Image (cartoon, rainbow, N blue to C red):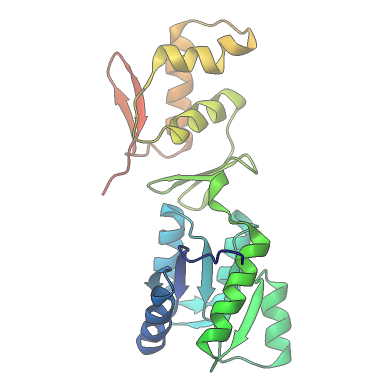
Length: 229
């Protein structure tokens, strides 16, 4: 028998506290971890801090519409499993929801057992999204698509800047020495440069990312990505 996806990390975008608690308690009994996000603003911020394994999204939210949020998700995570849970059961709404990027559409009221079964089926098909994504503060690196975002805005980087950012993000929490960065970014391709090249590249990278506080300089040694409060 296939092992269920019982340790998933889910976000549930829902402003009705009673419904959110009902779904959360059931899914957590199944071994899932569920974070309730009562506004789209909180949901966007949570996504920029780290993508879940699956999103559950209500359509009518106090600060916007779930279909617009779904489009925002798809611009950044095209493979993230997403299910609408909504009272809007008109066929036009269902077509619009799926057209905006949702993988499934469930109309309230619904049976929890059916919800869980459809979650399992979707996760089996998708295989997850997080293996290609790295986060730190409001920064996101998607190595699969080779894209970088700062506070939800895509940032265009040169190849050395991207390589520098990628190495630091993949080693988040660890200091990467200047000598190792020089070797991996330039020397490995035969482009031997002096130490000042790294300093200039880092300066440009910081400016393009908006001078993030999570990008630390370890004086005379190297650099480190570090989560901040």
